[in-house]
Length: 370
Ligand SMILES: [Zn+2]
Image (cartoon, rainbow, N blue to C red; front, side, top):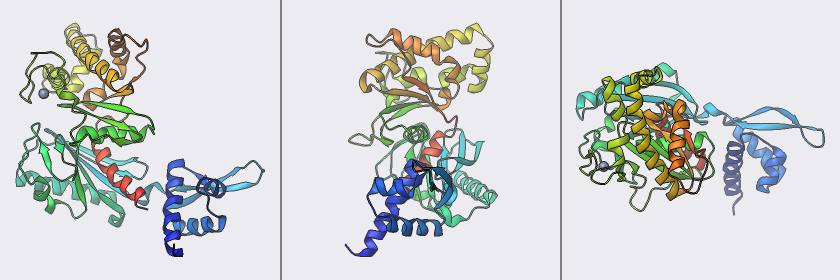
């Protein structure tokens, strides 16, 4: 193999190792990758020159000598995430650690019109201008939608929560002078949660927003299914011949556990519902109890199928921490094998998970492509 290729491969491998381990010494790199110290020193110098890593102080190694530790520069690159929902537009800027540098969420009803797209373009432009960002460091824009997206990340296969006509990807091309791709909202949110928690085992993300969806992840990767349509948990039937779902079928989980089931009692304001609930309003308590009964059925079914942690996310998930105990108790009553509901967890991100996950695609691509 020519010398240049060896250098390139080592360069990427060393960077990825430091990224994964958070910090590494020269010796650790040599042991993990089996490459010589001079090669490592050469590549570390190149990585430093490109402002991709820095020396993060020293620590006492076993021999008592102090070794330099190397860390990745989190702000070496950025990615932008946009989450388009029926009533809101969220924009987040993340760095290579998936830290949110800045966020903006505005109420803005989706319309498939040129006026909406002009507004979107203006908002993104303003948002980026406010960051004082070296735009050469912006990797791309991930756009999260409540829609099923084909594996090319450009074609909308199915969308009813917001109505999207064909060629959506092409029609927004004039909005952004950066690379951009489309992602399913729930899959993106699952990815963000899994990356944040450094999950290296299987996990399931259940998104409870104005629609119900989810993602099954293993080792930080989404399982897409044979047709990229996996984890459409919202359309699992939990009540035969039950309430009508927006998809046209009856008894789907979505009809019982979407956020609207709760927020309809408070004029569409979900925060207000949970405020009333926490103040002890008995009517709201009954509504929420019913809600948790259905949710427990779904969560227990998912546990039976996947045997992994279930993260409760979406807009309802962001209010669930005070009620997790109740949900766990209900789910355990349905489970003949287990005595603990500790596999049910609350999400980390409140409203930005989908936007972060969509942007994370570009971070992932950057790290892998080094
Ligand atoms: Zn349905």
